[in-house]
Length: 333
Image 1 (tube, helix red, strand yellow):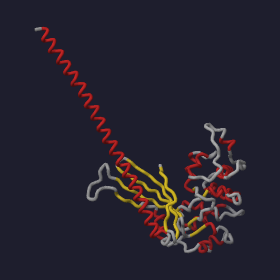
Image 2: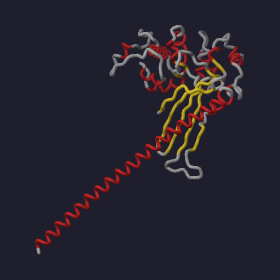
Image 3: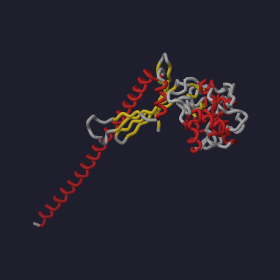
């Protein structure tokens, strides 16, 4: 009898042990299944975000194709409004849920910035470097720091290996840890500034909104009709004179933006004929660096779906004949 009781006890323990193991395996399998389902849903949402991104880009391109080049007034009003075009991404008639979201398209004028790549032009780089230094002074960098930063940026994009006064070339960069070389070619993206000697994160954040890296060495023609009030330094450097106080140029630049008609200025000449500008006695200097229309549009597309967010930046060229043409696109963070 005792042997049978022991056998029944062993069977019971074995059964309980098997049930415990099977329960643990079942839990592990269910966890794997839940993870796989969640991963599949994440991949599906990521694919949806990509298609939404392409759709937003196609919508913007189509709108620019129809309205951009021939409706500069409407384009300027959209830029100045600084309001994103928003498309809800939920099912019609249903409440917003965890998988709902939206797509936002922000439009800006791609010409309202200082093209640092023009510093690579050997024929004009001295004048350009001084103009960049003036811009940095308007951004409240001191004179010496402004000149050194401008020189370092020029050394990064020009084709030689001889440092400008206050600048930096390979000798400076190869001494870093890890070492690297100056690019000595045009910047592909303005974020390259972070690799340049003397440009810290704080300095980059202060200067980046006013700088850009176009695909050529030409100076951007500032669009007088899409300048935001805080972008006055881009205009003030065009009013800069060898003599006189900088405060006067600042006030004139701010006045030009403040006095802009609702429909914008019709011509560049109309701006230079304003009394506040005429008093500077510029004799037309700077007119060739401004315009009342643009041929370059920047888009920032932001798509949110569930817990995922995707950003993309795209640039389009505008012309009356060719319409809108995609120049570049890249992910943004």
